[in-house]
Image (cartoon, rainbow, N blue to C red; front, side):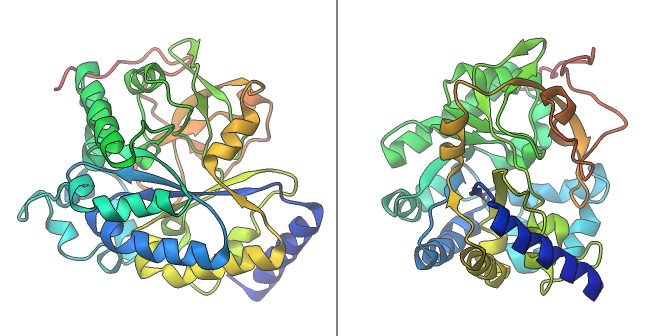
Length: 351
């Protein structure tokens, strides 16, 4: 990134602050045992120092991260992303062996105190997954019964720790299928955060029907998508990120405990300081959902790709909401989910 670009991004950020960015919701996904044990306390400390609240979404079942190595063969760009972001520094070698050469630790059982501390500190808590790797890598091969089992085990574990059912659900890797959307809608979550796109909350149309459950998409790129691309370095990342904030629009930023809570903690601290300097108000994802409830439109979703992230994920189709299309996310050339207008196969019957 050249100096002129950095100056332009900074100017955009300053202008956005003056024009009034509505809010930035901090959505923190916690994927692994190490992220829960070590990253959570660091993030809680930084959020407390900044005096802001966030939304945390937890993986509560086995940490099978070692099995993710198979993505090297299945997902184009996965290896390049791991090398570009120094994944070994983020996750550690033990995490890379969990579920293969090392037993998979059950996160909710092993990290109960660390998880409970998040709610005790006043943050919003929600469900991310029972088994993150299963959802991310095998969801499109699971039967509806197997999807139900994944969700119900996660909900039961969540309730045992926090004393109540989760109100929000954030999908691992922004991936979902029509059967999974239906299973989520049947469980009465207040809201979902499954998709990507610079659009306001909406009700996804899936298999020809608008879900009753509200969807709150992630509107901004993540750190691991940006770092090492287009000249973005650790030194320029925060400048570039705040330069994307849209005056007068709410934003949702997904943070990872394994990234901003560990190897790149300093960048998260820098971002919180920049928010304070810009006068940016932060909030929870649940607060954005509450503000949109009862007036959110229905909108389409489709599989696509996001620069810097390997594999397909769910995109909000901005044109179906009457919003400006974000060209940083592009529909995939081949779609194979049964979203509106796509007469494609359902999940297989793998249990």
